Length: 175
Length: 248
Image 1 (cartoon, rainbow over the protein chains, first blue to last red):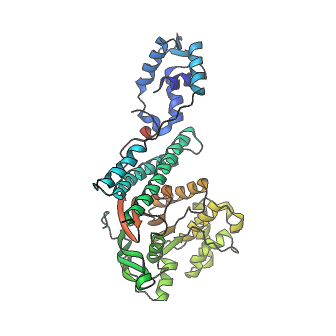
Image 2 (image 1 turned 90 degrees about the vertical axis):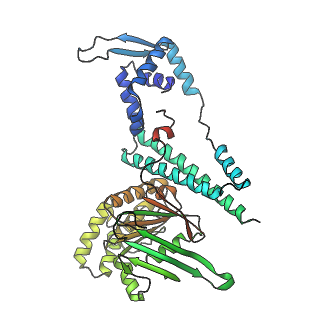
Image 3 (image 1 turned 180 degrees about the vertical axis):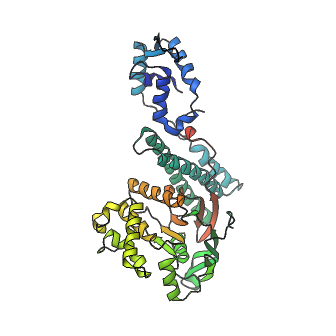
């Protein structure tokens, strides 16, 4: 889990670790299931050492072992503000697949259309999984929105595969 | 062919459909064989013009094949008389089209009950079943509306309810979300999911990857022939979390 994400989840109010986990769990839905429970505490400890988070020991109940309350320091607040303003977007890795098709065709090692078919099979399986997970979430929940993002990206990739298919079908027809 | 063990609901062997002759001959469906198991959702994908709609028309008896054999619930249907075919279309097969094909002058419930009435059901029983089907597709409160008063997604749900009217062996859907926005497409996805859970056999031809992804099995068609077949069940290679950029 990225440090800034944990910091930003704290920005709402000083919180216990388990409250942070619950907030993340709600936002991620089924995708949060893979989240390692201990990881958030490791991150919080690092953030504390870096002076971005302060820790208070609340007088908790005897049956509640987690009595630490985490809060943002001014430096932590600044980091969150910087992170929100930052524009970052993962780069899709299209070139590798594209070059695979080009190389396979040039060396006559494999039919580009078979490579496209194999890729489509895998993407459609992922789409099926993501779509089923999305339909199982309550409409308009945070988790459903994230799953919709996955679905839309996979659809975009599948559309590009269609373009690849058209292109390589046409080339095949050429002498 | 039929991996689930039971006898296939729908089976085609060497199915062909040609248009024109000699130098203008078009092989729209070229030696296609398939078997659809009971309760299975099969999707056929392919670029436009690949023959997938023609195939669906052949499967549902809307059009006659130029060659090959076609069986529905074990009965050979490619040689049926016109009358036999019409009867088959009314009773054993449910169609869902891209353009809905509802009767504009009939209300939703009247559209849905029509196939049952044509098949000889008592009016009261047909109406009761139609009302139940509209409830099933989430449109109980729209029963008295004309199609023109319904959204595209609602019209398609009425069309699905109509396709179910005679409890068909198989539903054949041709680009069911082709005319729908993404919100209405979701409605159709949910509906197909419900039908699938209820054990309805479904064959859908589409170029919409979301619709195709509802299927258990996917066939890719090119130039009238099947070029790829795959099971979509059994999960993908990676976790959903990895697709969203989450580690672990």
